[in-house]
Image (cartoon, rainbow, N blue to C red; front, side, top):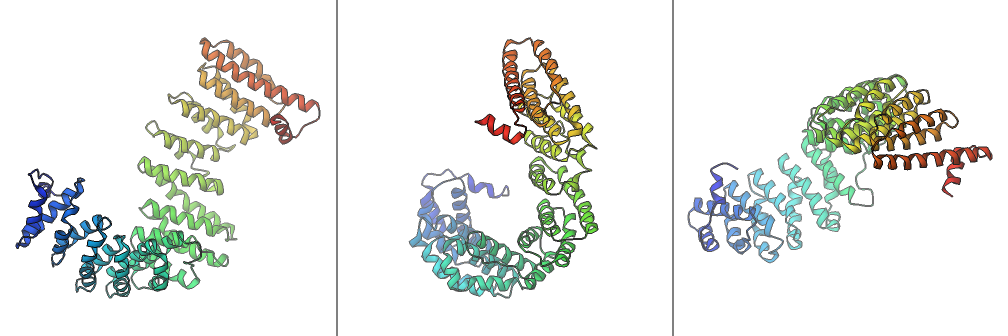
Length: 482
């Protein structure tokens, strides 16, 4: 909003509604336009100006595009509360949908789709059918989205009038933005329908891949998300799709990159060539790392996706663990996600680096993060048998810090390590007891002793069952629960 327009928000006159009513019916165009701006300003700040509905609707009969947009905005807001009066605008909508100006045609059909009034919906069908076949691509792409809105209001009407078939025809349109909007509309309709509506065939696939290179970034996201539903027929088909999608990994938009990664991962399941798979893994790593240089909110979304990716294909980021080391100014939600990914990427090759990081995190001020860092050391010990002893050494060092919540968490973690490696690390029990004796705070000592008692109870129970012949860990767990 410009400084010039701010004056419309500062009206404090008495009898404002009668004055606006008078101005809306003025014989001067500029005065009517200013009056509509004042009405929209009042509506924006929460004032009830619904009593001016008829007067505002009368201003629709204009060639001024800005004024028409303002009136349409007012109608979208108040049509539901004034359904009978909203019918007055139908003739103008229908007339505008055939206007020589494509912007007005698109505006009319878009507004009719936003007005969720059953009586108006009936009049929308004919203009919408014309706009879906309009000569101007801007009108066609607007009409495509309008079909999805109409389906949400009245699904049966959309199917009976053949709008779904019209949308599918638009996938073959020569304008990439029309294709993208048609795909977006069909995908939205499919999400709210129990039966299959949008199925991608080999012919449709070619059309979508062609449009992918020319449409806007959000159009690319819609197309890529729809392509993820396509099941390739064989390895060659999968490689062809991946080859066409891979350039999107270099896109500046994070959503495009993540959508492209999703498709590549899905198609890699069918690719039999190990060299091709290895090269794809190498290509996906740099774009994923780049996402971590964005603002924290985008980082978080990227990390949530990366967390899923490394569960399926840990080799993609196996050499990039350093980029997941927490920075001092990372928000806590980003740190927590990074911690999870570091645990999944931990290996015998990088465990020393990882343990140094975890040890440092365990001395931070955020209690929840510290607990999770201590727990992460235990999870690495359970995951990597050859590194278990080093993990225990780090845990014992942390216990010597004598911070009560660190000691509590470390004891719980060591208990889990005992379960994983029975009869291996019992020698550390004496060290644990010595560390507990050095705690000065009574409260800390009580809490930690409770943790140790729980730990010893589990240990002795396990030893008892081992002595009686129950050696299987799962059976022991079942017995312990009972």
